[in-house]
Length: 331
Image 1: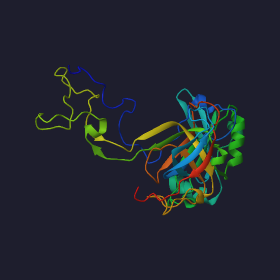
Image 2 (image 1 turned 30 degrees about the horizontal axis):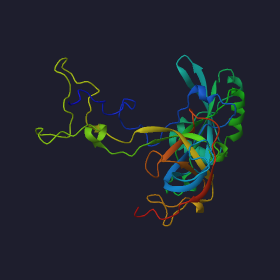
Image 3 (image 1 turned 180 degrees about the horizontal axis):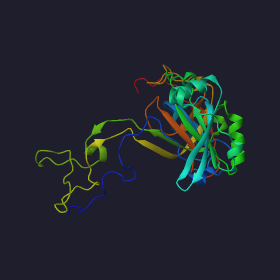
Image 4 (image 1 turned 90 degrees about the vertical axis):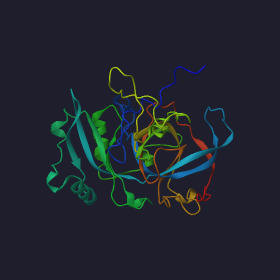
């Protein structure tokens, strides 16, 4: 007997299926998670370099505890981020609203600000003392430093970094202490820590419902067309429901993968560069992070690394015995 029903094709967890607003994502941190004990940035950023594999000994409570195992890993080049400004927020009935900013007096920050906002849009610095009662949150405005990476680009990305902590005054003091300075990955994460990785997937343009939703291809004896939905809906009411799998945009979506484990944070690229360099990237120049498993997006695309909001517990460090540096060309 044939089945009368089947699970719907395509998850409704990702809707609408449209292009991301920009090529690198925002950093979303729930309010409950931002109230951490330590006053530290809750996220970092880096460019996806490529993948390789490592041989390691896992010391966690996994079934392979104490065994030497092989794992695929992703390398993310993560030079330090420059803190160019502070942004202050006030809590209202409509949520958090920005009430002021303080920009670093450095030449790089001023040049970046004028490029993004224009010379006539630069406002005076925010007075913290006279508005201390209004401030409910403070965040860092940072920019990447692609000149320190092997990505081969000049224009930096500009975005916000949330700060963890429960005391607003301590968060303000920390933010003032790092204004105009640099933050490295080691200031935010440690090896063995679980993180969430956000990025924008590879864009594939306008595709059909078979590739976009994974629906069944029609049989040989079906008339005219095969790669389409068998029915678009009922006769009455005479309209098409939004759940019908239709052709459209596929790829270039913002996606977040939870609970990825950081294996290595280092600044010696000679330990990871393969023979001939990484495909479609080149060579790593400085700081990098090795993350267990795959990471969303193509090479040379910026990904955001956030402290895990559903972490299973304490960091689970591993002992790395070998990092493959064999050529990736022709693989």
